[in-house]
Image 1 (cartoon, helix red, strand yellow):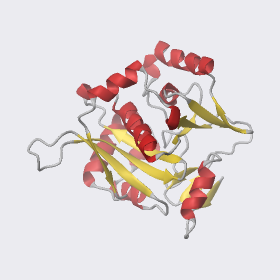
Image 2 (tube, helix red, strand yellow; image 1 turned 120 degrees about the horizontal axis):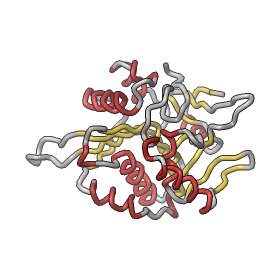
Image 3 (tube, rainbow, N blue to C red; image 1 turned 180 degrees about the vertical axis):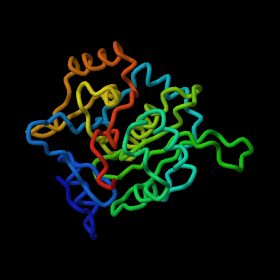
Image 4 (cartoon, one colour; image 1 turned 90 degrees about the vertical axis):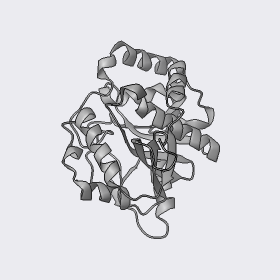
Length: 251
């Protein structure tokens, strides 16, 4: 299911659709609607109640020197080069690997709603020149939270393990400072290796027929234990155009 976002009320429409499980791709809001399958589940972190785990605290400490900058939704060659490195390692068979710089510009810049790119850089060496770009995230601002449309980072940077987790943790911190209750992480499919990182953020809610429902502590414990038991699955490359498992409408 999909609909176009346009006009003076695009933000409010995007807000309303986000609360019922839609995601944005450029000027289109979409939601999977399969006749015999409901595996794609919308999930969001309750940022207002979030407390980092021990592992997440270590990731925050390891990357505390990164400089995060909120930028207007305007693509750069530096961002595109970082995206290519990320896709080559994390999603080598995904449809997004065929993107060129124009496609990337379309993904970032064609937005009818309030959105921005948050860049994550290492400290400047001379105090003048911006430091090395190691991560970025295209983010939408909703009235009740932040929606992480697409994040990517340097997969080769061994000294900064957990960059993907750090970007989510930074968004949670931003939401808390802004008084926004949720971080929308897109779709989650139980058993899909590349999506299991999402269950590590507590508390988490999923969208069911009756509305948003919180994972019980026991269920989230079980899901996290499964990830720990099979660490090789985390970050594994799956076929498909997007990390959410839904082909990009723009492609």
